[in-house]
Length: 248
Ligand SMILES: Cc1ncc(COP(=O)(O)OP(=O)(O)O)c(N)n1
Ligand SMILES: Cc1nc(C(=O)O)sc1CCOP(=O)(O)O
Ligand SMILES: [Mg+2]
Image (cartoon, rainbow, N blue to C red; front, side, top):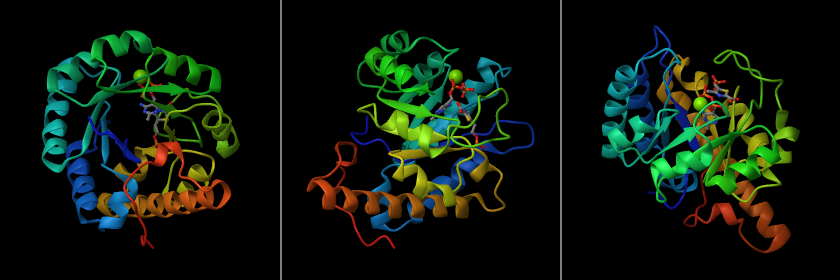
């Protein structure tokens, strides 16, 4: 398992007419082509395999096998949404669960102590409970309105996000409606990284969209670290990556 959670989480878009494997390939190529400073600041690309709720386990498994192979060859992190038996079957790095999935403590027992385990949290209380259950990071949203998923509560915005990031000691990944232009305000609100579906899978050029997201994440992470050093004379606990600089 990677010691450092990557800052860009690409969630597969398995809706009809989308090309999740092609999008993952383009994203991995864009990550590989990013400069050393950008990659050092943003860490490994994280790909979360997410299928529609009505997809069969066979569909999920077949997509996960392909994504897992691509990630392993590229040094990327592969997580599986919801279906932890699929995560185990393909040897993924971990999984992500939410309110309607296995409880976090049960998910941790399934995946084992070394796996990455993400949990969705819309409040600090839910986030703290998830961490007590064994979550290694939190997915917090919806940060903005999104057309990718129905039935979500009102957007939290950066202020609602900050209410969670300020209350928990694990990396927070901001989700819903995330674009490159919103990365700076999300990291300023304490997010470690961002998760995206539409910003990449719906882009005319998914590889270019990934490059832009990585560049903005690297800029914001460096700015954030510098602010922390200025204010506290130390690095943030969740940013203990190799030295970085010159990403502009
Ligand atoms: C990084 C990240 N954050 C939140 C979610 C949402 O998970 P969940 O609430 O279980 O909803 P579904 O994705 O299962 O519909 C996520 N997948 N990833
Ligand atoms: C899978 C998912 N979960 C969300 C949550 O808030 O729990 S939002 C979301 C989809 C996010 O897609 P996009 O990047 O296209 O807005
Ligand atoms: Mg879920």
